[in-house]
Amino acid sequence: MEQTRRSGYDVVVIGGGAAGLGGALALSRARRSVLVVDAGQPRNAPAEGVHNYLGAEGTPPGELLARGRREVAAYGGEITEGTVTRARPLDGGGFQVDLADGRSVRARRLLVTTGLVDELPDVPGLAERWGREVLHCPYCHGWEVRDQPIGVLGGPRGVEQALLWRQWSERITLFRHTGPEPTEDERERLAARGVTVVEGEVAGLRVEDDRLTGVVLTGGRFVPVRALAVAPLFTARADVLAGLDLKVSEVEMHGHVMGTQVTVDGSGATDVPGVWAAGNVAGVAEVVIGSVAAATRAAGAINADLIAEDTREAVAAYRAPFSPAAEREVTERVLGDRRHGLTP
Image (cartoon, rainbow, N blue to C red; front, side, top):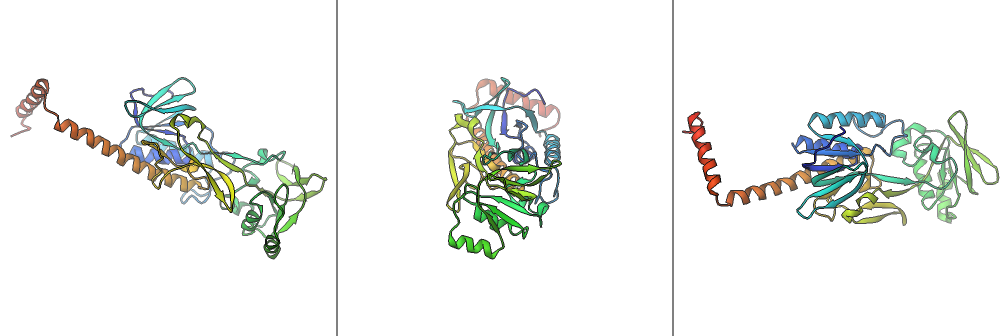
């Protein structure tokens, strides 16, 4: 949909990936007016399929999103392509969301599902193979490269990664690269699991017939692998939300910073009233099905919050004394109902 209403929505969902669509579906089914603003840059676009998603195992990411958009639209939810440049609270309550093309929409509540950015190690050729043979999550892609020679690019978490990927293949090579020297205990664990450790920095990748064949070290040595596991820095895509002043915190694993995420409680509520966040922007390690589940929980919390507000406003109106005009309106409506036999 190219046009959006300016009278406002109950909820604007910023981000149209699986999490955003999952939240929008639940809210639309709750009969809320919902707008999803989608920049059209899904993080998992290079992947062949979405995995560990019950009932949709192996579905191409684009197909899963297209299916989700149709489901949201079937319940009255609206979806528009656009990039949010700013979101800010309004003095009278609610929020204004500005888009790069000049449009602005208003919302009573916001659900932020903008995802994250994968900051890859600076190795030539790495980005071009990202999501294909350059991987980070064995639960997402391990089965597809099982039993093949798999390399692990060394870094702060290289040893833990190598031992994890060992579950999917006996042929694991840890490239030290710029990672720390393994301790004696770490070398023993790697040796016990049959993980080969290769010294030296990785200079680049070798690709033949559009397929990764191996890693080239700075000295020219070639080591064949069919997949390369890396550990990106996961950075929450929260720059466009600076006007909301959301709290962003660092996430650590094994004593090393693995990324940043928006701070939320169990329902997805941020420390800014009226704003919820779900998916990878609020959980860097979340998989697709988990992101959808988190957004669905957030949608329930948002709807409950709106119900509470609707009820407060209804009670205030109920308690307010009738004006003469309001009394005449009620009297006319009652008389009209009686004429039509609707009241005794």
